[in-house]
Amino acid sequence: QVQLVESGGGLVQAGGSLRLSCAASGRTSNGYAMGWFRQAPGKEREFVASISRSGGSTVYADSVKGRFTVSRDNAKNTGYLQMNSLKVEDTAVYYCAAAYRGTVATETRLYAYWGQGTQVAVSS
Image (spheres, helix red, strand yellow):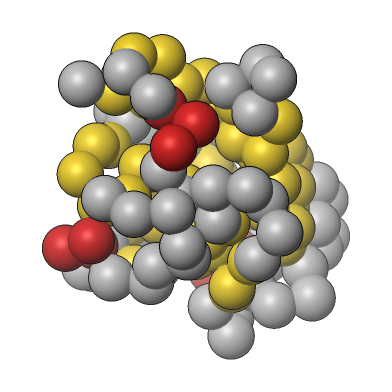
């Protein structure tokens, strides 16, 4: 089992920045690729970013490319999502997840473990 706990969400004005953290614990938590997803009210959960087990490979949704940066510190068992130039449409609950594999993954079905989510609200 892998446990994931997100933090760092909050309310920010459009154009601002937030950094989300995802603390992982449990069996071989560093052996998994990590992903970030988000879900806005009334919408399906959508992929945001993913980083490989080693941190050497990343992939982003087109909607966040150039604004968000995913990273991880395996020594601290923690993943991060740096969000810059935030827009109102970035408002959602953000979830981190650990995949069944070590390479990047964009589909929710490839993720075995999920955090409880952290709310991000961007005001105009």
